[in-house]
Image (cartoon, rainbow, N blue to C red; front, side, top):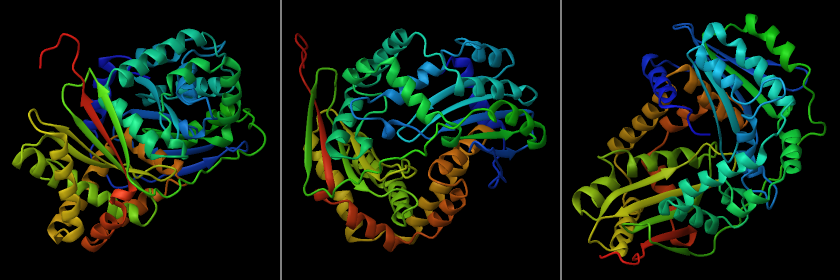
Length: 443
């Protein structure tokens, strides 16, 4: 859901800035008889605490024809229960000077509250209640909110729409092909019974974990957690997830999108790649930084600064995902330039790194950037918990220690090797956004 207010956004940014960077915080792990796992990350420097509850369910888990169900259910969770109605928790947290929110991804749904540590008991009781007693009231009004969100973020944004179309073409069977927000027609078709069944299956303690981070004390909070969450019963049978395997791509796929909303051409290309903790994920991460790690990176220097072909150019690799995903190149074509010129320039940079391995200094700089970015993103109790949770979703929070070790060991030869093996035209889906002249608009 969108941030409740600019004040809340400002508050979260301040949290990230005022807490100094640290090494990996120690994690204390507990479990209840119903399968719920609880992780504590203690940091008593300032009297702030974060409560996060993670459900291992995202768009990847949705049944056929029901895309967007995870995101719609997230919205419905804020409608509350018979005991705690709509906005009750948000109002309580804000009165204490804190903030709450949630977000849905392909892999998980996470709800959080950050507030003064003396009030951290508030979300414990509330989250336990809505884990078991959600009323699912006012579905139609919330459905309209979600559909309008889709219109604004995707249907009326040609670059995001191209990304959605290209990803759907790139992934033939794998569930990441569906947009997290859902296809419009399928959002409209989701029923209350659909949501109730989905909620009953996935919002279960054995498919959930809690992270408490910051100024928290396990010995004081565990009795309350056991009291509130202990009686919540598991869904029953162990979840049986379907792990789809994307077949190897046999040739380049091409997507064209014409849009009256587009002012400039835009190009997007996606290559199938493995995700962390696959051994190649570390070199792919470093490759992404070499190509797109700021204004000194290869793509910016070549396409934007020197050749003036693009207004922006980037490479992006999402490594922390439950299943293999894609390595993405994108570029916004500069006025007066042709989209084919930009495509050729992107291809030239890819071929360059295939032909000549990056220098040792370039690799080290990229590794430093990856590590610094990772450390900065963990620079608060909220974000420390966030990264811990993302690794827990992949199987174990301890994997975060393996991540940086893998990055530090990457060699130039490994970077060149993954570029050669994955960045091929046979493994690529390319999307072109072409501006279409509006009726009455002069060019």
